[in-house]
Length: 395
Image (cartoon, rainbow, N blue to C red; front, side):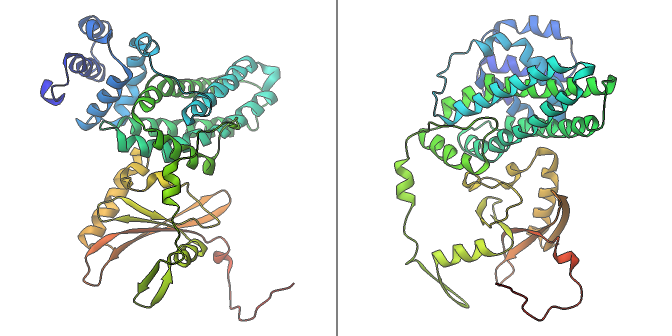
């Protein structure tokens, strides 16, 4: 297998063989004994590399999810004892970790509340877990794009995203199940146990692996941008008071746009007008270029999906959970080949009917330039009947 490790050393090669052995369902005790010397020296960086390599070699996310906790249990002491500079208060990573601490407090309260007489209190505590969605959204939409830019071996982030979705599904299932219960039963205990395993497990994966490596690889400017964009999504359970110093690079980017006139085939607009016009449209727009990289998104008053400037330049495949990437690829392949020019989906979300459309963008010769995604709330449009020709304003 050494040819697949790119000669990165015996420790990484042994770690890879060890992980592959778990996937092939070999005896765990024998694997630990065989590779003990190398396992005793592994670091968070090694685990990031090995998960990346497994995915590149064709091991599925589903297969890795089955064995990742077993691997982490074996090397838990090494990960816990890894020495890295912890973030100080005011640093974005400090608040990611602070959220984890607050989550663990709620989970511990739930554990103490699992008694027949406390079912209503349990309902309240479970409802509080939904707020932690902000933590996962900041990871997926802000932290991950910067890690993808800095890490050569970033595919372990796909594993995290898939586990986020598992947590979301399990929390939704538990919330629905507990809504009309007045007593505990086997299924309720089972759901709570499964959710605990997922959420506690994710805090370990963050605190022991992703966060140390992120702290050691992202630049100060990266963290400043992460901090700036984090307010758009918000925080779970906490309200950061202290922040990093303002980026000097930010001032350079705040250029005046009023005088930048764009000459278009059907008229002229300055940049400020164009930005305002696109943001005024009742559409949530994202443009992906011919290389599948996100180049632009609008900021309408009503947004359906979280977008931050961290995704600019990000491969669109990395903007989706791994389980749905094949659909993205299918659409893009059909657009690039010229077989299709449009794809549509519609979903119901938070009481609204959302139409999601994808359009192939081509030049006058038919050459593919990219893909435009446009999402729109059509709840009220679906109710329209007849005609409306008169203005009905009242002041």
